[in-house]
Structures are given as C-alpha cells and as structure tokens.
Length: 242
Ligand SMILES: *Cc1c(COP(=O)(O)O)cnc(C)c1O
Image 1 (spheres, rainbow, N blue to C red):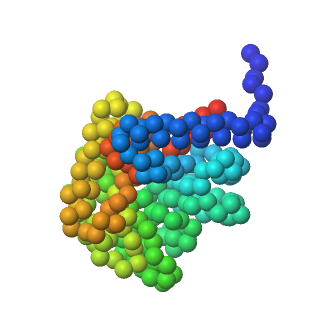
Image 2 (spheres, rainbow, N blue to C red):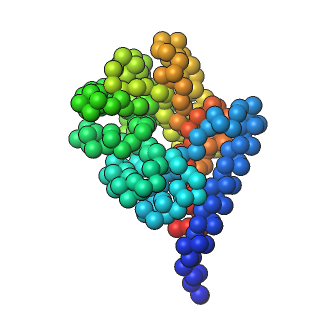
Image 3 (cartoon, protein in one colour):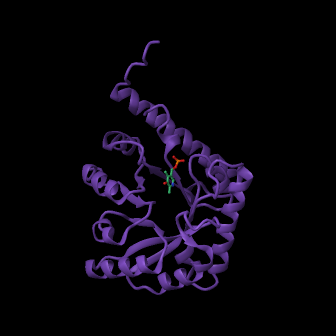
C-alpha cells in the first residue's frame, strides 16, 4: 500500500474552500425549498477537530463565525487567530470557574443550561461592563445525562435570563436526541424546539427568542426546514482535510 501524500497548504486551502462553498450551496438550496431567505441561516464552523492552522485556513476561505465546545480551546484559538478577528461561539458546557476568561472572547454562548450559570455570567458581565449574548440550551431527550436544561425547567430559565440586565437572551439551542437516527426523528426534535420557542415567545420580547441554533453536519437540512437560524457544522467542513 502506498500512503497518500501529505497535501500541501495550497491543496488544503483549495479543499477547504470547496467544502465551504458546497455547504453554502446546500444551505441556500434548503432555504429556498423552505421558502426562507438565504440570509436567515448562519453557518458556524465548528473547529474542535482541527488545530489553529486549519482553523486559520477556514477563516481565510471566508468562514468568519467559528465555534468550539471547550472554553480552553476558544481561549487558545482566539489568541492564535486574533489578527483575523473571527467571531467565536461557545457550543459546549461552560463551567462557572471559566466564565471570567471566556466572556471577553466569545460573541455568543449557546449553552446556558442552569440558573447557577446564569447568575455567574450576569455577575461577570456586570463587572466587565459588557453584555453577554446567550442561548438557552434545551435537553431534548429524557436523559438527564445529556447536556442542556431539562425541558420542564426551560420556562423558568428563559424568564430569568430575560430579566437579567447584563445577559442578553437571544434564543434557544438544541441537539437531536439521536444524532445518527433517521432524518424524520431529528426533524421531530427540531420541530419541538421551534414549538417551544413559539410558546415562550408570548412572554418575552421577540428579539430575545429570535435565534434557533440547531443542526449539525448530519441533520442541518432537517433543522433548516424547521426554522434553524444557526447551523453548527464541523465534520462536513473538514472532509478530506484531516
Ligand atoms: C461537535 C459539535 C458540532 C458539530 O458536529 P458535526 O457533526 O461534526 O458537524 C455541533 N454542535 C455541537 C454542540 C458540537 O459539540
């Protein structure tokens, strides 16, 4: 067996640009099918699988919204890519002792999952004198081991976040309960998240629940059909690059 040659930097850039363009084309086609404007859906590149070099290549190819699931990775990559100034999203759990270092580098925390975390973010954002945009992450499964706020506690968390003065609630985030299951199952989960948002929207100003962060490489089509405004895509962007 012969090993495939290590791709050159130019080749990596070419493949990365192709992956990004292919995804943007697919997202636009789904938006059209759903009767939605292309500008309604933001592609967020999840860079947790790759190092700072490939992350830089992705930004240079035109992806300016990036996400990591670990706070430490956001800190490190935000520092390494400071010259390009991409916008960072945190899509994994935020421990309270990491709030202080994380807030200055992220533009949106997708994973507000408890009142205790809300209190910690509110306190740090007040000290920093800088508001923090958040999404409430909803656990769409019955499994308490999965991430996110249990569905029954979402109304109270949304009300508390809406009332906070330095935390700015922007919407909800959720993951399909079985990432590898049939498209119809994922779509049902996303529909539930949208319906939850629509119910909650009676009680808070509309701009507080405008965003729906749902959809990953395997299920972003279903998510967009159900109203996603932010798709978080990792593996599909880096296909053939790792
Ligand atoms: C890893 C991750 C993604 C991206 O998943 P892919 O299937 O690789 O696109 C999206 N959202 C969250 C919360 C993740 O942890």
